[in-house]
Amino acid sequence: MNMNATLILQMIAMLVFVWFCMKFIWPPLLKATDERRAKIADGLAASDRAEKALADANQEVEEQIKVARDKAHEIVEQANQRHSQILDQAKDDAVGERQRQVAAGEAEITQSANQAREELRATVASLAVLGARQILEKEVDEDAHRELLDKLIAEI
Amino acid sequence: MASGSEALTSGEYIQHHLQNLTFGQHADGSWGIAHGAAEAAEMGFWAFHVDTLAWSLILGFSFYIMFRRIAKQANSGVPTRFQAMIESIVEFVDTSVKESFHGTSRLIAPLALTLFVWIFFMNLMDLIPVDVLPFVATSAGIPYQKVVPTTDVNATMGMAIAVFILIIFYSIRSKGVKGFLAELVFNPLNPQQLGMPKVVWPFVMAFNFLLEIVSLLAKPVSLGLRLFGNMYAGELIFILIALIFTAGSGFVGAGLSSLFGEHIPAWFWILATATVFTTLWMNMKGALDNKKTLWLLLAELFLIGGLAFVGGQLMHFGWAVFHILIITLQAFIFMMLSIVYLSMAQTHH
Figure (tube, rainbow over the protein chains, first blue to last red):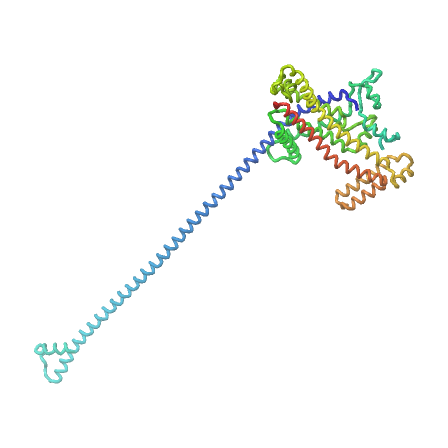
């Protein structure tokens, strides 16, 4: 229990251990922890930045989707318009074609009728002459009675 | 079960445990190991406590090797678990120093770390059952062994005086020799500021010097003797508890004595220890659940030494648990006080 020179040796031992610690333990350990702290701080900052970038990108994507959707809408609208345009045009064309066909048919019919009428007229003239000749039992001078005949034909 | 064959009285048992292994000059002029407290006292100042020094150095080097290994492999990558533990201790000390030490010094933080871990290790020796290492030493022919260096006033005061030297060094470094001396004599009553006549100055200064010297010397004493007192008392309580269960006078314990005579043979203790260890081992391997383990342990302890033995074990356990707090706290207080004293030393009053 007495105080003795152990005191001095313990003192020296302590100072040596403190020196060891100061020289070989403290600096590398503190450097490592400080570096790790910096690294972690960087990592956190980077993740913050990435989060922000992600949010920005999301917003941009949304905007682009919106634009695309508008565009698609517009295109559909245009297509619809064009569709009705084409339909109208086709309808118009068809109507025109029909009218044209009808007109052509009518013209043909008129022509045929006229022709038939001409033929009939000629036939009637000759029949009339024939008939009159039979009635009169004499030759009818066609040239002499041309005026009469034409009058008759016109009446038919 | 203190030292095997010799039967010791309680007083002798305690004395044996509190005696350091002292190396010094005998009265006849030869150098050697002291046998007994009286012989150690005769050796005077120039004697050494071999056990204290050896354990201090062993523990100091354990600290150094442990931390150095981590310091060498330390990098900013992902740390191993052990590295994380070491780094958290370093971080803890670093924070304490930053909070308490106002100023810059490359020395303070490593000093604090060394003090904290080293003193903690030395205190930790207290948790090794009090008889184990002395028993081993006695078996190896070493008469005395006090394994907790911090229960030796020389070790604690040695560290405290080293800190004290640093306190004076820091005072002189920041204030100069003149400033340091001026602080001693012009505090707390400054005759100049109080406008006292020159005649009374020497008296005021002498009064100041007296006060300041006391407060200065109180620093190493508060450091060293507080640690010593706490650890010494803790150690003593462990020894007393050990005494209680060595008496082992429960009704089965008494039966043991009548079975084996005065000395219970060594194989019985080895068998008993092995049984306890097997029980704990089986619990760790999952072969026994916790409740069964506890009852089995109680039964085994009871069979080994009777009721007093069980009581002694429980007290030992309880005090050890409490002591874990004490040893950590004492190491921390020694560190914090050193930091605060050094911080005070280099600030101007």
